[in-house]
Image 1 (cartoon, rainbow, N blue to C red):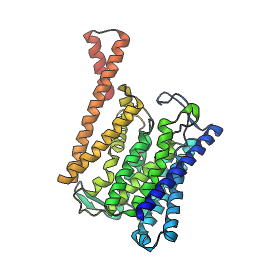
Image 2 (image 1 turned 135 degrees about the horizontal axis):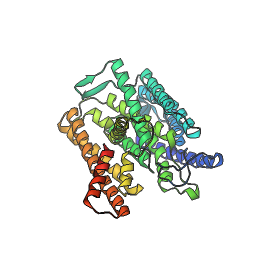
Image 3 (image 1 turned 135 degrees about the vertical axis):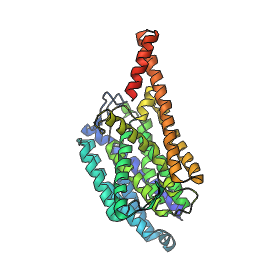
Image 4 (image 1 turned 90 degrees about the vertical axis):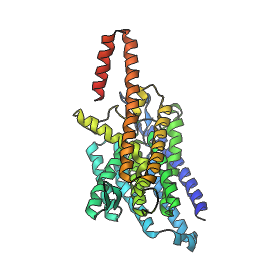
Length: 391
């Protein structure tokens, strides 16, 4: 019964999301709501940026209809299998996401300052904490286990800001933010099913259904046929918040009796966007720049500069993300959480060193080819200049 309903929910959310995206694209063309090309963007033509509108609307409608159906027609057995507290938590999570949805829509339509979006993130975090959903256990990270309420609130605020900004920042090429979200959702869905977290599994399926049509329009859509769209801040902020929210629920609900640490199960799929945003922010602060002013220092920009196409860059980053999840699972099986974190950080450093080296090599070859100067002093001067820029 549960799996039949899950398939129906998936089909419902896919259908709703598809219809909403089609209508938002038409609306964007009528009202001239486009993401226009500039010096740091990849696309060459104006693209509608309201595709993420479908995520929130689809999630709310599908979840409410699901609970309504289960309550009236699902049967007592299925109703008893679902945790009412978890249903309430999901509803409060949707309430919290409403603030980010509102701020995201406003930004996509009229534009708002990053400080204003930060307020929306904080309000969403307040809703989570007030509803009782906050990180209550670090499961041994830095030697910390159970947390007091205020400690949990502060860490939850940090997590919400980090993850929502991570997905907002990494949304730079077709399909990247959405595919990383899909990877995270599939990971959470599998974990939820294996640990009998049915409500979390149902909500994960709903959000998966909302993302799948967007990936089609975003990756395979054609601007000239009016079938291409971007998710905009509306989509990236909402998905980032949902990823953080579901991660907190998995982290809190799973007992530390599994061979794999619950913290790893909850957050390992968020490593790539979170590590990347922390790296970019530290580079901008080191260079005395505003950390919220966009540039071309993200991992996808570096890979594109290495002459990889958008599709190859998308595949490479997702392959790295899957590798990090699997590696974190394997290490967590044998060692404690702190060793997992150190190992993943060192692996991230190695990955970035390889990317930076290829980036410098490609830039050097381009500079040499353009100048047609192959003398050793010229090569040494330009190599040292690029190394300084990377620092």
